[in-house]
Image 1 (tube, helix red, strand yellow):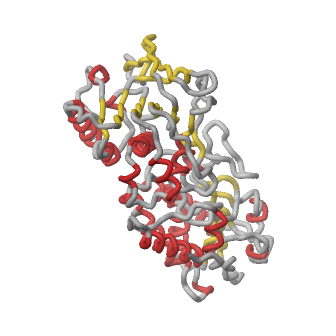
Image 2: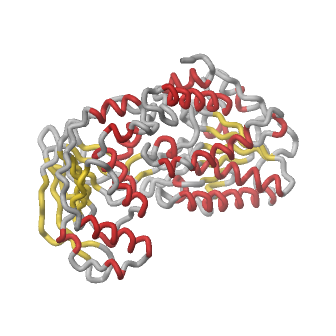
Image 3: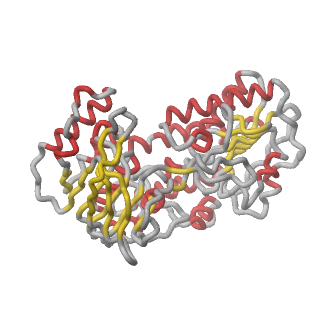
Length: 464
């Protein structure tokens, strides 16, 4: 283990722990460091992450063929590198401590005893429930688990069953499109990305021929982004199939936003495309509400109720018409749900830590999806962090934050744990980039998947 430099316990220093090193946690740390410096305060921040590597859902929740979105990593890296890499420990403001899970390796109470404040930025990593019969059948999968697999998350199995010819994807958001696109795409077209080798091998053996994406609302209510939708139509060797009945009464010129107008024009253009006879087809269905996943010992089909716009404009309503599709697998992309943090308040219904402007209780704060729920893009995450940190600093200025009861550095508690550091991440990052350069298909990086290998490389104990 590469040990972290012990941070001096200077009197008057504001000490803050941030739990979660995804965008929410990194933005919070950067904003805190910047605002504290501008106000003449000395602040030190420990950024805890349960995985050995930073960046959270940007590393493990974004499809590997999204280089523009992956580019966010560059700015996150700059923030952490600027705050973490100074050789003078007195001038460092952020210290990265990875492979440490709160509640397993250190308790929330132990953290709170060593810091003026703790900010929870743990995100939303679980699939939201879909309460219909048959949802637990083999062959019914949560989209978050599938995304974790194709992104090389260390805590999911290395293999994924891709023996179904016809697959249903439930959802009309960007995650549903990511899942559908990866399922429909030929493995060959992912070779230049950072997709792990075990995932390429699984996709090469895939039996998928038809991917059906179902949404309970109409085309004018889709939750995609124009870029995501456009990329769907650029998948080589895949025909896009739409159904004219889903567009009855839909007027692209009357769309509520320019983004929606663009997407409706895209969909209408696809309706006019002739079939190319491609080996794989991606079907987009609207006005379908899932009712039941059918099958005895395995998914054999899925049943929907056809929906229609409500007369009062409140949303889709059932029509009493039911349709069934023969599929051998179902992927549920109906949203994410935040996990509880041990010993922190938690709203089981919404999957968030209850808060007011990021304030949970004295000395405890929240930001990101665990604060507001799994909605919004990177811009929302930044403004979220600004609100939380503004309130934290106001509480500090007003004397509402208690001084740490324990004066020992937290690394003394972690001495028996294999935690990773910023220098360790730089070593792992360089290692993965090196694998990409020497791979038979040159790519930016090849991810190391096993957790123990990530930790060993970070510690300099495993070199290839």
